[in-house]
Image (cartoon, rainbow, N blue to C red; front, side, top):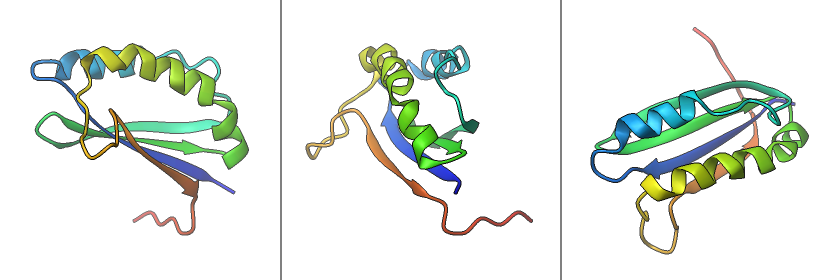
Length: 100
């Protein structure tokens, strides 16, 4: 069953272009089972990353590569507050998907 991960991040002032470049240049090796990735601008300096995967197992197998990319991003991310750290991640199996 298809799975998705959604991660909210906020970049430091003036780092938006660098954030987008890092995602554009993100190595896809180690991302076996990835279907698509989107970077959504959700507010001033706030972004949501949406990954679509063939399965939860494929997503779990890609965690080392995703963590390596996050490690490249950490210096330009702000703490989200409330004990969340620099990311607020969610993931799970797709329960319903529609296309118009």
